Length: 233
Image (cartoon, rainbow, N blue to C red; front, side, top):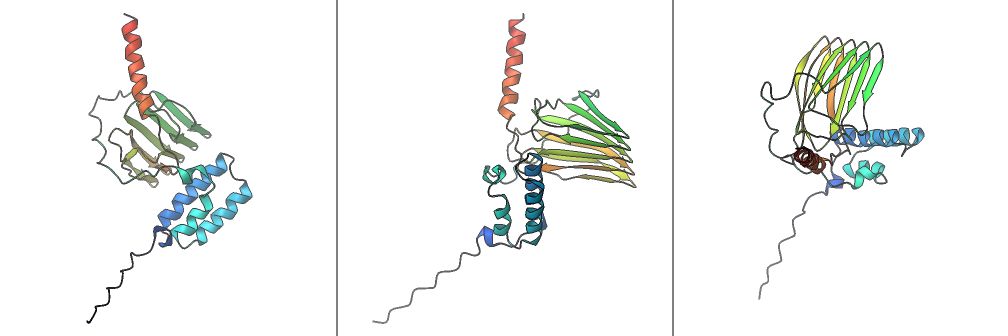
């Protein structure tokens, strides 16, 4: 009896670790290394050595080697992008008055660490630099508006990588750049950056390896406020 030879098993293709690394992959790893340096997890020499290796890495697997001993490498993946961010707040929905302002005139100013983001934040850099870091902030509201104005200055805005990010603005002989981001969680915070860069720079992008974990805390805070209000009657 003539037996047919079994069909050869098709190659399933290269594993993710064997894929060629893109510039975006290198940027993500570089951001994580930069954070590790700022947190004191890496020395300056270790950071420089790893960044040099990142620039020379050819595959995704080679890149992952440089962060495998850092916490960011073991966090749950953000997952695919979900539904588009909700529409911008209607006029008047968010008060025009800022909850807080960060101003730098011939100087530098920053807001980072554990702080409450509020609903509106204003940032002004005039011959100076401003850093707004929301990666560890507590989001009490789902929608946050940041007004950023740079005149011969620099405004840097960083958000957790699992929120949504939108921007509207422009530059006059300057740079206004917001990296759009869609969160997979429907109730995740949305950060809107509005502003202008006049002979300056305004930049907003996610901070890789940082995830917002305060959505439930934000909801609980609202419940606590309602309860306190009820008890005060």
